[in-house]
Amino acid sequence: MRDEKAQAGRIKAEEAVAVSVSRRALNFARRAWRPAATAAIVALAALLVWHAVYGRNGVSVWEQKRVEDRQLRKEIDDLNQENARLRDRVERLKSNPDAIGQVARDQLHYAKPNEVIVTLPPEPQTKAQTAGAGK
Image (cartoon, rainbow, N blue to C red; front, side, top):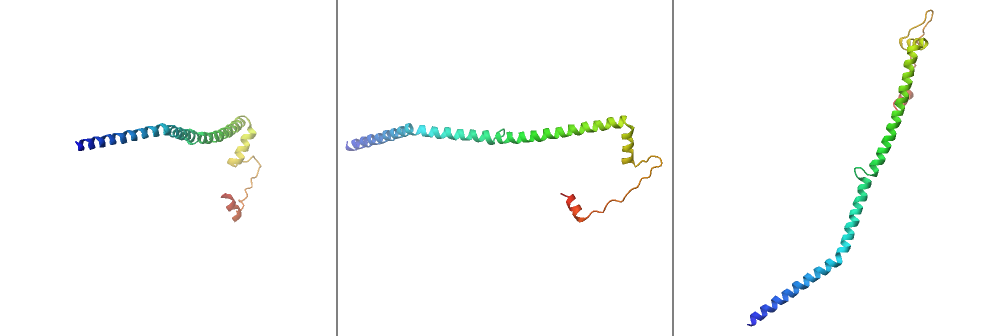
C-alpha cells in the first residue's frame, strides 16, 4: 500500500511539474508573441524596401533605364539630323549641276576642259601624330 501511495504521489508530482511547465510555456508565449511579431514585421518591411530599391524592377534599375533612354533619344536625334542632311544632299545632287560637278571632281577626279589637276603626295606622319591617332 505504501508503494501505491508513493507511486500516486510521484504521479501527482509529475502532473504538477507538467502543469507547471505548460503554464510557464503558455506564459512565455503570451509575453513573447508581440516582440516576435514585431521583429517579423520589421524584417518583412526591410525585405520589401530592399526589393523596391534593388529588385528586378527597383529604383536603381529604373534609373539605369532612364539614362539609357536619354542616350538612345540623343542617338535617334543625331541620326534624324544626319538623315535630313543626307536627304538635302541627294536633292541637291538631283537638281543642281554644280553639286554634281563638285562630286565628280572630288571623288572621281574629273576635270573641266583646260583644267590641270595637281596631286600632292600625302604628308609624312611623325611619331607624335601616329600616337595621337590611336586615342
